[in-house]
Image (cartoon, rainbow, N blue to C red; front, top):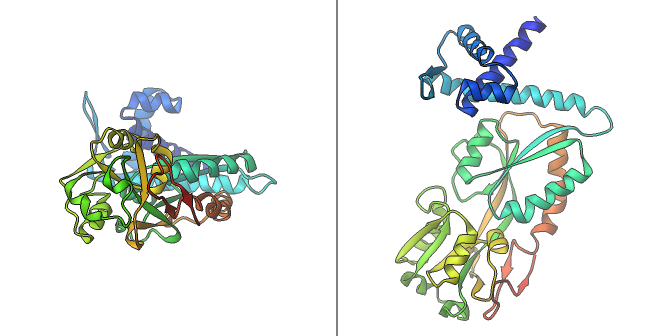
Length: 326
């Protein structure tokens, strides 16, 4: 029975590798197995399940409906086995195993990078992997067992309601404008001026990042155009070139906005802050490695985010904020 169980696990691992790498040959290279052995594993799994998982053509592999439904189950099963291995290994004096953390650009640089560095120093036997994405991508990864925990904004409604979450802190949303723009020094700030502007945001304002458009709608601002840019550093360069203004999370602004040609302004009122929540992988019993990472997160997050979670900036502060407060 033990030999058969091990073989079945290898079938699952091979099937997932074929999907992830896009071919039997590439999966074989990744797993250190021959292409015929990879094909045999998938065929054996399909025979055991009584259904076809993959459609093979000369040019590509496509998941069948059965394969698409089975894939997240296979990932979850392999992850649970790995979790069990990790727990056994942590029975000694040192933590071992793997923690996969989800985040988004900006937060990853300001919060997760130093946190991962500190955790690695404390627990060298644990591998910490970072996976970035927008809120819905992170939620999908949690639901399918591809990440253990994720930090994301709560503005985008959950799709998988069985993914538990807890409040962490609020991130300020800031306005990035050219240094000579009227909004760079206006006090009080007249956000009605945004109606005549091209406003740049990260992500997709009509999809995963609709929270920015919702806020603009609530203040009655109808920009000439909303320009969607994937990288905050590109937004900074476009603003410096006088091609528009930008609305960014404070984390992204901290790492991407620099130079005397650009001003960061704190937007007034609670409307311009967003809640960051900690999301846990659904249906998984916590492991000592994940618990240790969460403990460090809760200990260090207040100090790491105190400079950024609530931002203040006054006119004449170019490329940076003038002061911060927790």
